[in-house]
Image (cartoon, rainbow, N blue to C red; front, side, top):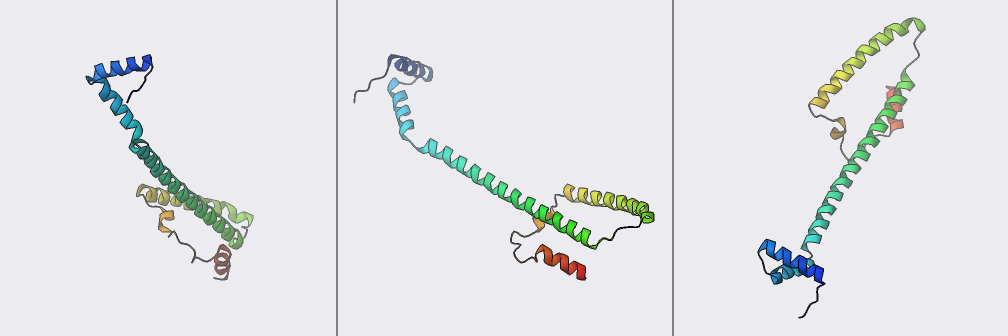
Length: 144
């Protein structure tokens, strides 16, 4: 087989052969073998595919967690607004003081859970199909 290479490429092949202490034929043979071998490109593609799959799963978990968080907050707000009567003006100062104390306790409990690596969202099973709807939960809380 006779192959033609442009003079500039021949110089590059010769320089590489001299640096690597290999024959020019060995350099050309390795280059052709590398070009014909799909392994390198396939490995890169497989690595990208695995990484994209992992990122997709992470995004799906984040979407699920954000959805659960939003639903939890909406349920709480609806429940709280439904069952909490307005306070008379003379009781508001005491209620605000008690509210601050309770909030500080909440923040401390949250900090302890986060330091231990605990997460409420991880405690919720992936399949929440058997859980009562938000409206049902609010209605049963009003009745109870």
